[in-house]
Length: 272
Image 1 (cartoon, rainbow, N blue to C red):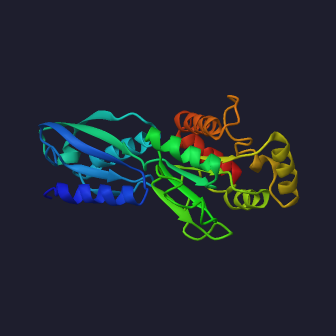
Image 2: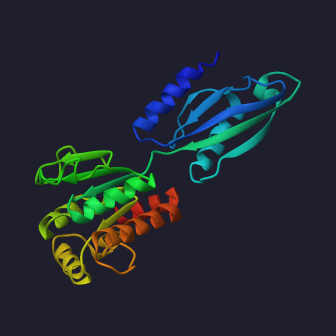
């Protein structure tokens, strides 16, 4: 089968646009007989399905297995495979070197609340280039690009924070810092069971204790509420919006860098 590099690259772009993670395996060297030439590629999805081919048979099955293992690890890897008669249908054996790459969506920072703290966070987050930043507010005066020039997307939503709000995935970091207690609680109810990488709630320790009691009466068990980082941020001191923004982003980055996908999956399974 002749490789169409353009088709592979287009498919990679489509998957990333859909915020889907996958592994890409590429034959980078061959010795002796092999079912495909250098440059052949296969896309491996987390559920074990795949697209394109690097030769089929037990060789390809091993590559898929190693690609799935890579999805729980951050490092790119190169593996060598010894091809047998069963793999290639010939008595002369071959050796194939395969390079694995892991693709994940760009982390997305969703800021619910475009007030002073939200503005400071979107500004600082934009300077880091670590996230695609989305600001969401139900107030027209705060949901503007003038207020959030560093954000990729600014959404004016409805009072229930539903209209125009993207779906949450495992590379989404949620910050709940709206204008009032009732709206914050609405969002906690909505997202406490979401597969987000991080959920943070702004407020004093007294507010958080009251929140926990109220939510328990409303059916959210305390252990579920514990998945939410509240009060939000690392305690670095200071009450200026920029100082608060730095403390929040420091915690978000700490979570991003310390938790593997497997840990997040286990956490979500426990909380569901």
